[in-house]
Length: 162
Ligand SMILES: [Zn+2]
Figure 1 (cartoon, rainbow, N blue to C red):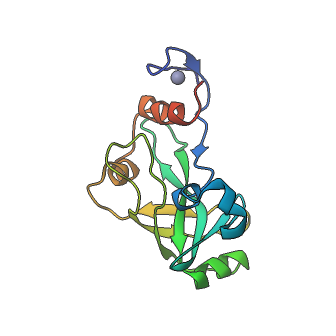
Figure 2: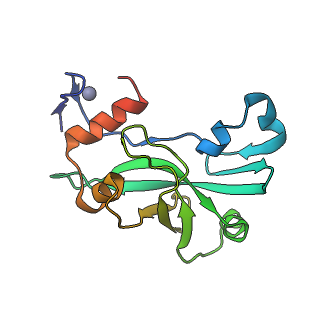
Figure 3: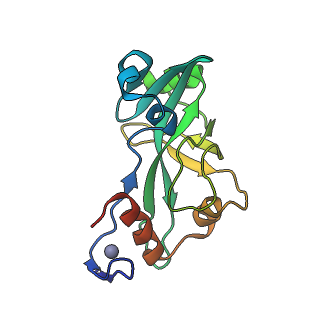
């Protein structure tokens, strides 16, 4: 399906998923300290600070797109307890867990950092899916009510300039 994008004026096919490559607490560690204080893979991250070690996992916020079956996937990081982080690392079957969203998503004027979420884990290699607490935050409303394809492309363009 070709879509004429009002954000950039071009024609687009298939909406890509976008994601944050690291949690904000990782990014706030000075680069020359990261080797000593952090670990980072595509799915998991730890950050050590004066309070101890903090655990983060990468998941996906799926946002329905109006008039389209496929949702938009926004890759973000959430905090986890040490116990749940280690269960996930061992690929154990897991009930949904609590997590704080630890990315500021630039598209949203209202801060998304430390929104409350419920994290759903899945068997196999698919990433955990993240359900926002059903508040009046615009991101939570978008997840409940969906957004237009044009809005989704605005978010995509925040993370890739084309
Ligand atoms: Zn565009």
